[in-house]
Length: 184
Image 1 (cartoon, helix red, strand yellow):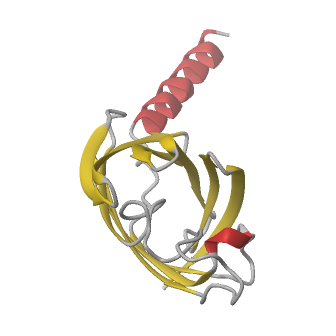
Image 2: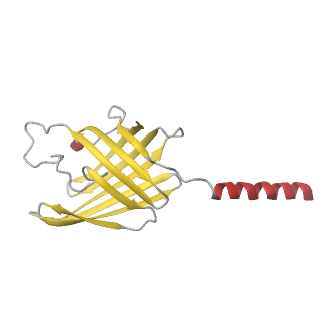
């Protein structure tokens, strides 16, 4: 009986040690949007999108390049998805965003149509999922506006497919998209 208990205790200790040393999920790579498999909000009007992701133990850097479809002929000037991108990087137009992976907020100021606009970014890696968020607030012609984006990234078991579940909340309402990226 003592041998069985001893062996069980040793197995549990090795399992715990192995789990504690498990390497966190790494989202690094170049990712191309598979528009056919993705469920995009119609306001996004994305023709193609590429993410270049560099992840270290302390930081996640995401560079986004997007090609958008032309707006419909009857769309109002300056309407949604006009390609101006209210922000930078993933979740707000093209560019690069560097997130810290310690859960702390990073604030970046960009030039907006009405002056400087702060964007607050946050990222955390939790159980193999990357949680990304951004909040931008600015004053517009119709008053104060806040736009929030939340993305949850997951990788397929083979590491060749990145799925991003996105929720955007703005004065125009809430919209969701599921973006499927393949490693390229």
